[in-house]
Image 1 (cartoon, rainbow, N blue to C red):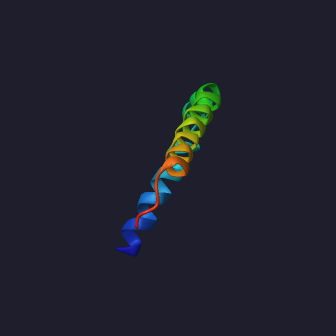
Image 2 (cartoon, rainbow, N blue to C red):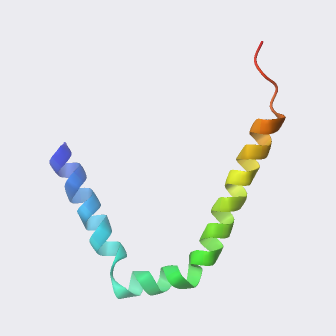
Length: 54
């Protein structure tokens, strides 16, 4: 299992370091960060407004 996980992460690392993928991420990176930030803020607001269990 450890070898499979290591192989998976190695493939992901190679994939995300190609020029085309890096260029695409640099174009979309700001929107990806904004979207994930908005999702985390929404989760935080929901958690803050949630009532505690008795």
